[in-house]
Length: 337
Ligand code: NAP
Ligand code: G4F
Image (cartoon, rainbow, N blue to C red; front, side, top):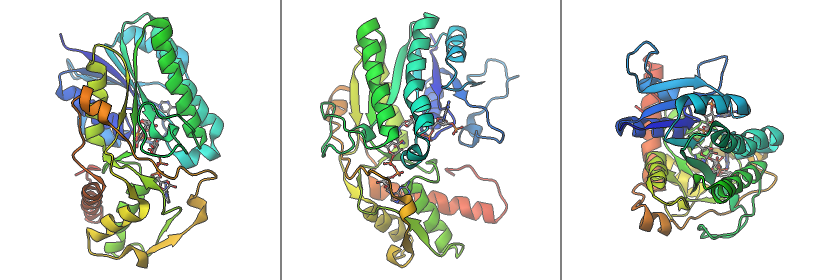
């Protein structure tokens, strides 16, 4: 029997890769997108199907994680086998400027979705996009038993959503899992996250269109993986008979400086000539070091990462150069082609 999945945040980086993965596996995918006054579907335009296409397998719905009743109605109509909650205000720095909004969408939004599963009476499996940001100031390596100490409104909201997911599993026997994913990037990464900000700048500096790149803290350590590999881990979590929580990471540590080296090095430039400091990009409380131990996912999901930060930097720089060249020649190009 063909399976049906709901993805919140289908227009985001992970939502777009997950939709592709599930369509490739024969699923019908219902993607939830929020209403916007301008188009926000660039990452999924290549898999978009016209509503008049018979038997289409990608169906888009307007819905917002702040609207619990809409979530109930949607689940009742679609009756999915699997629900992936990827929707969030996902930017850590922005969460200091919009803490209540972040708490509402990223934290309470997950709870609304859990309640919507209960209220709709639908038997479904649910994936919650939890984050390594929950570990905050707890030193690495971090795994499923590491205590949380969040350092941002975003991290606090994700901790709330994490525990709500565990609670609904324990209280109602719901098949709900947390994927605790460390940073993962791609050519579809939002332009204001540090990796994409750097790789776009490399393309523009090399083309003579930008002189400087303004950044905040260059000493932060992150464990950067490749998003298409991480959505595969999400799917594998929901295929297990027993619901559980898993860390997904590469285990390889790199500083922002290391990523700068790799990205500028791809085109033979020295980043120190171009990068300038702007305290505006620092956070009131920083997460100094995130390095994951994904041995549980490797053992139980048979999942392991192949792309590490240096190859990731090269993939992203090359994609940004191609995209810039296409823009300059007046051609439209997909974000990752
Ligand atoms: P992303 O690119 O920022 O995508 C977030 C998605 O959520 C977008 O589709 C966005 O819609 C949607 N959204 C925002 N506010 C919403 C609302 N009020 N109602 C419904 N949808 C809303 O994030 P991502 O990198 O794909 O990450 C996916 C999920 O994993 C997020 O929950 C994130 O917090 C979590 N996570 C990410 C990472 C990472 O390194 N990427 C690591 C751990 C956890 P628009 O397109 O309209 O903005
Ligand atoms: O790319 P970032 O903004 O990602 P951050 O804060 O680690 O959060 C991302 O990963 C989390 C998983 O751990 C996700 F849950 C979350 O949704 C998001 O996807 O910043 C990475 C590091 C930080 O230490 C930041 O202080 O880069 C540092 N940084 C230095 N200059 C900068 C900049 N970050 C940004 N965004 N912009 C800068 O100019």
